[in-house]
Image (cartoon, rainbow, N blue to C red; front, side):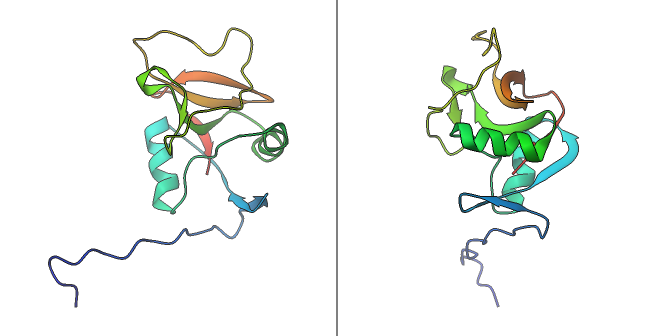
Amino acid sequence: DILPDAVPPPTSPTIPADAVTFNGHAYKVFTEKFDWLTAKARCESLGGHLAFVESTEEQAFVDQISRGYVWLGATDAGGTWKHTDGRPVTFTNWTLSEPDKDPNIERCLVNVPSRWSSQVKQSHYAFIC
């Protein structure tokens, strides 16, 4: 029985059988296209997060498994690019003229083949957890 005031135990990550690993982390590409908030919620429902790209090696790996435009786990909410866990984005791989710097529009990170783009969170892309 669960007592009314009991806090449920934290969920452990559910790693999909077809996930691939890189540097000790599991990655899964989802080809369904969603807005950024829905993609973020889908990853979190599995106990994970939208993928972070933090090195040139990780960028090459993400490019290899995604083969297209995919949401990543960073946003410029508050005016500074941060990962969804709150850490600042320190490795960058922007396309020319990116990131968009309009202070009135929150942008989220999209991996385009070999580079990054900032897009409005209402756009629909595949995603990688």
